[in-house]
Image (cartoon, rainbow, N blue to C red; front, side, top):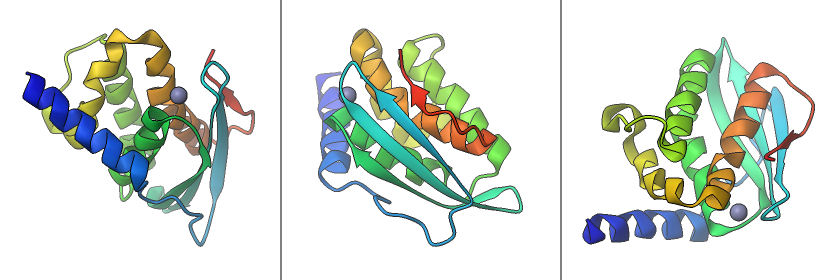
Length: 148
Ligand code: ZN
């Protein structure tokens, strides 16, 4: 188990150091802003949705290692998915980090690295910030997301 935990930490540290899709996509069709006041994390999620499919996704902002790694892994996970599939993945991820349900490894893939945050309620907000912001952007909500 500790080896697994180390692997998880390695993935999170890697994505924090080299965030994927930390950029503004070319044809942004919707975006969302999120803030986690408890930790000071800020994220903007930018989507390029075409024919109801997330063709491209990027993010901007700054925050702790968990929030940055989560945003990075989120962008990798939702790219190429339909709006509906992306919203479903939000639900799976939320269940994972809140511990509401046992994670389904097939549905979550690499995102399973965040299973450990369920033991740290403060960190759950860091891990879900980018996802709540993604959901708002997918739904076309313009109110900034606040995790409180
Ligand atoms: Zn944080």
